[in-house]
Length: 394
Ligand SMILES: Cc1cc2nc3c(=O)[nH]c(=O)nc-3n(C[C@H](O)[C@H](O)[C@H](O)COP(=O)(O)OP(=O)(O)OC[C@H]3O[C@@H](n4cnc5c(N)ncnc54)[C@H](O)[C@@H]3O)c2cc1C
Image (cartoon, rainbow, N blue to C red; front, side, top):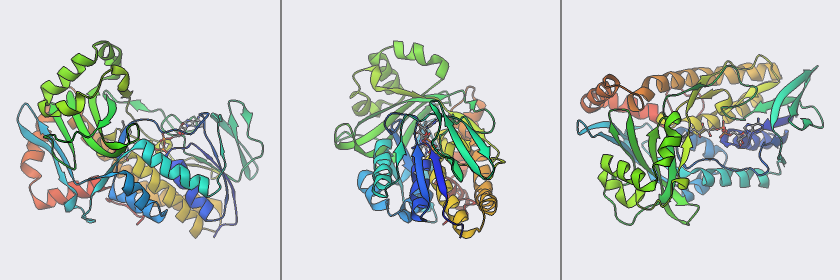
């Protein structure tokens, strides 16, 4: 095992917080730096796949996460034009045979943050990373306000898709989505315990997903989302809440008990999606984790899971190596195949659900509707979504 290191982690997302927990456990000195004045989660809900749950279990956090989440057994979607299933995946077909966990970001964040605080990892806020300086066997993060006090043996970049140190530019995808969190209505007619969606071709998509506790109300919650192009966001916001509810319900009338809870467009947040698969850093003392290495659209629901897996892989590589360069090589090897595969799958699948034109959604409807009944295809789709294809960490 590598001797004790002085490690800086930049970013308080799932990747940075999980890496801090794993590395602190290995007795390294760890400090987290975060750009905001207070660590905070951004966005609404996300799915923790069986692959991500396994990592949270390693951290001893899975029970706390479960208590705040909702099990999601089924991913389901209907193409309204064809009245055909365009998404149909049951977690009972995964190797794990379990479920995903739908959770509000704030809940995932608060469980990880509390564990980090309990482990005694300091978080230095108001620290926006702009670059790094490498000198000899040490690396110094440079923030907007200047250099960190002392240099570090290792810098982990977990600063997300817009990392100033990431390799290559993020390609902005044509479609993003508006997201909001509402309470789960006591009665509704959408598929229970499922992420359910409705599509008109691939240019309109409405979705609803249970997220466990709604932190704003303390009641069971649901994330609702609506696909939109970023360049239309302003015009869309100016339409007003009545028009939004009308458009949503004309695509999906059963969604009314969910969207009718929204009283203002201010409750909706636009998420812009991007794609980039960077090359790993050529510097041994700089390691990327999560979206700073690989980001993509959330269609496959993998991003936070991948960040958690990166963190576990890095800890494993450090534990099994006797030098930093050996650990860096081991980390890349552990992650390369899984990352390449999921980035490629995301490029293939995203346009089937979010794009203009008629051919891609037609292919989607034909394939899913007809072939997804075959046991081999069902199992392939289930393994893909559960995050376990080509995964070397278990
Ligand atoms: C709408 C939407 C839905 C999604 N749904 C899912 C899903 O269902 N399942 C799933 O697994 N993933 C999902 N994702 C993807 C997932 O949110 C990301 O992949 C994941 O959050 C990446 O984690 P991270 O720790 O790498 O980065 P982030 O979560 O982006 O965290 C980065 C942190 O670094 C900080 N930071 C940024 N820049 C700097 C800087 N220069 N200096 C210092 N600090 C900085 C940020 O403030 C933040 O705290 C979704 C994403 C979106 C947008």
